[in-house]
Image 1: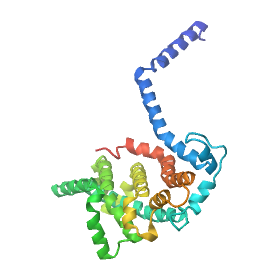
Image 2 (image 1 turned 90 degrees about the horizontal axis):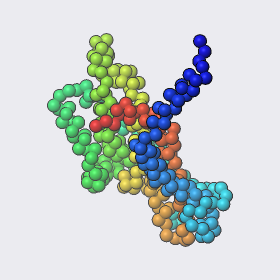
Image 3 (image 1 turned 135 degrees about the vertical axis):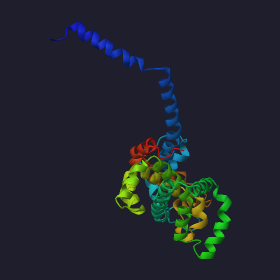
Image 4 (image 1 turned 90 degrees about the vertical axis):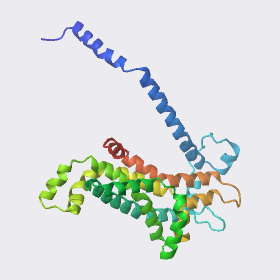
Length: 303
């Protein structure tokens, strides 16, 4: 039996009515708020990119909102290779690789130790484990500035102050409380029957962690990598104090370039250096944003 034109028309009407009902005031308000948030965050980034592509003459003749007349990457090249800080004109490329050397081991070991500690505390149900968890929470929220001086004295005593292993160890120490809480929350949501069944089969703690729990933790691992990589890459204070002159991160070099007072201010070079410094965290978010959303939905950062 075929549908009559009248029946098809009624079906179209029935299909249209629910669609029209989706346009609610709340949804419109949501779109307005999201649009304002996009404008708030996108405009500064667009201004940084636009300014970095301008020549010195364009900067002097126009205003900050004027678009560049052409795609000129000279400021990017100078920021990367020859931007000056005082009498040294080495750009930011050397400090970029310093930051890579700091970030990679710091992220790997802070996540590994945090995951191990979080899994152990989730399995170890006792008053002592609760005390340890509470201590880690307190440690996570203590401002860096409060304990910097004692750490400087300790690291100087053991010979780690101003060295690459020293700044890596500092980031691992400061990242451990956050990573422990992150993985503790995640493993609290895993059924304890899984560990019990593995133990009945003869698996030990590390076997259960590395062969069962860690493969299940992809989403929370991505959240941890994004949080740690972004935080350590953007760090300025710890890098300035603990890295030493030969291992200064890119954020410190960016600050030195921007605040150099000799010669004419080159805002296009400063903006290019700023964007190049911010580019790695942006790429991490863009490439792994889907997994980050999944990790949040899976309860990776629930309190």
